[in-house]
Image (cartoon, rainbow, N blue to C red; front, side):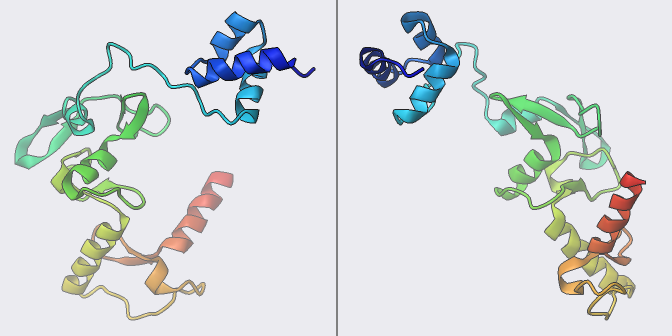
Length: 192
């Protein structure tokens, strides 16, 4: 049932003043869902959220650092929580979830990583910024290792026809493999 003109005008005034859908429910006696529908129809975005008095004033990097502990050899150990399903090291900052290694990569490079970020050192749990690498960086490092070790492949495509320039990846020891084929194999393992 549509709202009468007077209620719509009162609702518009409330939204213009920064009122929430719950405030509309309390003051005008309409449901929160109705207020949300009229907020969209009237062209008002979400109500501004007040900054909590207890909001953390630390930067993302400062918050990340509170969950790290230096170890031998310049590595860093994560002391924060891990995602129960997969063990990803993570933390919350200003209401958002962050993966520890992605933040470590951003601290070092100043840019968001591409793909999965892993530790490229011999300490598998490491979150030190100088030890983590995103997918393109990891591919470059491992390709250089393959060239040094003589394990690089001259093939331009894999046995299934995937273009090597796009899909070639390298194991930690520099052995090349097809990323697309590995993804297909991993998908089959999950569905089996």
